[in-house]
Amino acid sequence: MTAYDNDNIFAKILRGEFPCYKVFETDKTLSFLDIMPRAPGHTLVIPKAPARNILDIKPDDFAEVARVSHRIAAAAKKAFNADGVTLQQFSEPAAGQVVYHLHMHIVPRKVGVDMLPPASRKEDPKVLEDHATRLIAALKS
Image (cartoon, rainbow, N blue to C red; front, side, top):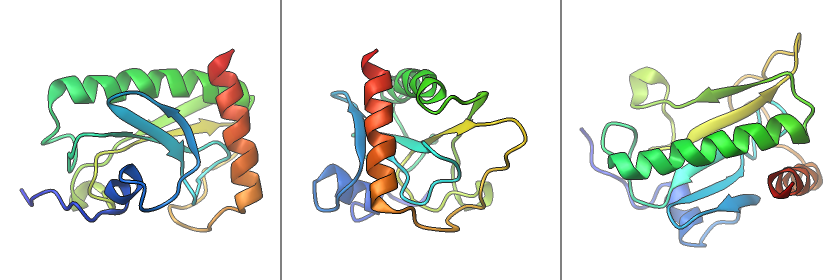
């Protein structure tokens, strides 16, 4: 397997070198909005540990990603009045992985509304700010 790249975009976000719309953080994870969402509220949960994907993450670190993803999913369903939630995780190019730092996608879904294609458009910052505010509020309630 290819080694972890310390210069991937998520590593830069973790180091504070690149901004994000943070919605939740633990000692082992960071959760923030995808700037090219496939649906309103599309959130990413990443480990703070350097892990390329599920194939090289330590089980305890992945367990925390799963716990936080569970919490974000419930809050996203509430905040965006969603009918359901899609969780996705891609490992290696054959599976569709593009950013080589493990990340879980949490995508609130509405019946009859398709997800946008991956990386199809960058969302307006004001919309992302609003979505972050809504999700943070749902996490607190």
